[in-house]
Length: 122
Image: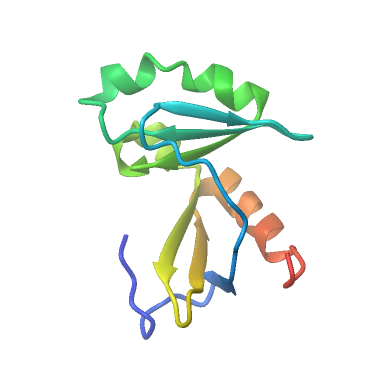
């Protein structure tokens, strides 16, 4: 889904952040694990050809262990997208990024509510 600034639905939460922290990108690997209280698994599906390749990654196992952050998420099987929190990053002004989130399905709406409850300064 692509939304412009004038047509965003009321339930879409938008935040602008400036992040100067270094980050490891998943550009050359399919899955990067980021340790923490809840592990984060960063998946980059760009190089995968189809649902069979994606399902062979063991998404269920990663989801049971932590949070999945997926680039090229539109390549995920429909069942995964139907209950997801969709996050969009867009360029902002002065080296900022605008992060927008929208929840799909019951689980996605629950995750969106948790997103909206985050303090503004996170």
